[in-house]
Structures are given as C-alpha cells and as structure tokens.
Image 1 (cartoon, helix red, strand yellow):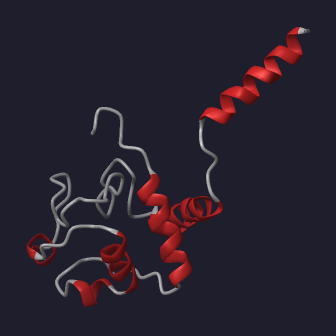
Image 2 (cartoon, helix red, strand yellow):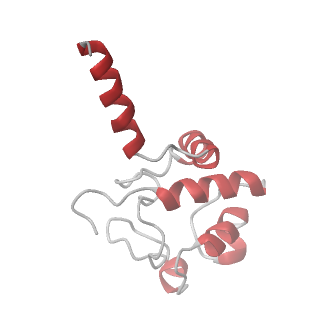
Image 3 (cartoon, helix red, strand yellow):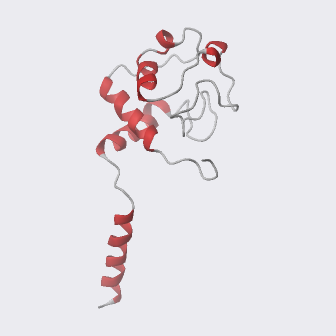
Length: 126
C-alpha cells in the first residue's frame, strides 16, 4: 500500500472516532456566534456570564459575573426547559435581570440550547 493511501485510511479512521456535529447543533453554534456571542463567551465573562457548562448550574452562581439580585435569588437551575423559558422572555422568568435579548423563534432556541448542551466541559473543569 502506498503512503498516501495509508494516510487517507488513517484520516478516515481518526475522523470516525469523533461524532459528527448534527445539523441542529451546527445551526445552534452558528446562531450562538451570531446572536449570543457578542455578550456571552463560552469560557470568559463579557457583558454576560460565560455559558459553557451551563446545564445543571444554578442561575446567578458563576462567581466571575456580577448577576442581578433577582437572578441570584431566583433559585433556577439551568436545563432545557428553564433555558427555553429564559430565552423566550427573560423578564417573565426573573423580573430583576439585566438581559434584554430574546429569541422569539422556538427552532432557534432549540438549536442554541442543543449547542450549549453538547459542549464539552472546559479542560480542567469537571
């Protein structure tokens, strides 16, 4: 077998080890980058808190961000349902919050939520 063919076979094999990004999560990543990424980093604080590993996190609990008192006291834990309600209308979920952005289309919310849910934890974070 020639070297090029071996390299191609190794590349195909290696690519099969990583799951392909689904259409939904790809769309979610695109929407996140376009609609959310200006204010939210995945790993660092911007105008809003970082969103990597948001699933299972208590709202207002990331120490790197100065949340509103309302959000700190809300007692929410982020999951698909709470994120969907939040992205639909943050003010309806917690009246004292600083997020003025909404995603009115359900399919966009689903895609962003799917994207955030599938993100791996940051290295050194478990």
